[in-house]
Image 1 (tube, rainbow, N blue to C red):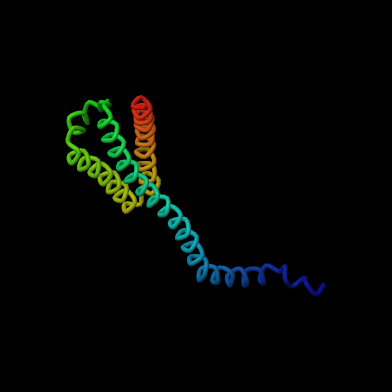
Image 2: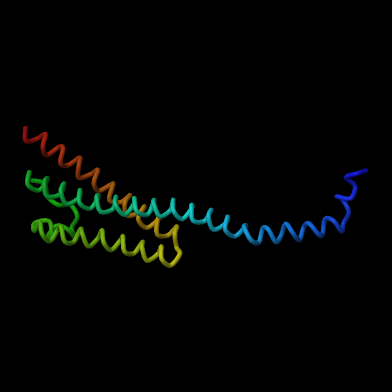
Length: 146
């Protein structure tokens, strides 16, 4: 019987309002903290993908020029003319890496977080396939020289 007063509608209404006031003070801070943690993880993913994008483009230049020195021919018709001029190839590849990173950064700033990460993930996936192909060609060119 001593606890019966806890279940009265007047007591519940009075303390429900107090709980709402406490939640309104600390709830948004907790929600913001949780969102900041999620943003931090997504930002780390974006930075990692951006670094991978630059690295993949640099490896593409290295492997293309190395294979061409051994007698390979650039298979991509749009890059065929540029591949004969190392400085031009480096400039174009740096521009490609920079443009994809800048585009994803703009998407990020416009709060299109998933699109920003997807853009870099797709371009990195494509460049990974190119890098694997180049590594295979380079390996076979080096093996044929022995």
